[in-house]
Image: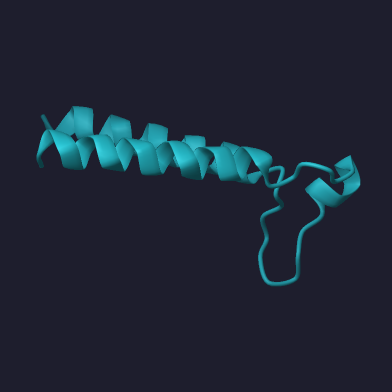
Amino acid sequence: MSAREHDLLLKLLSHQCDAVRNAPAGLSDEQARSVPSASSMSLASLPNHLVDGLMKRRTERAQSR
């Protein structure tokens, strides 16, 4: 992967993190914690889910080196 591709991926990830962080803006706690029928995950639980996934991936990469 080139340095330019790496930078673009980091920028994309940053934008996606901002979107996840801002998704529950303006919602009450009850609304942010509600679970839609199509998923078992609420907007409030999404950031924790993403961090868990990133940490798992980081651990797997470190172990494979």
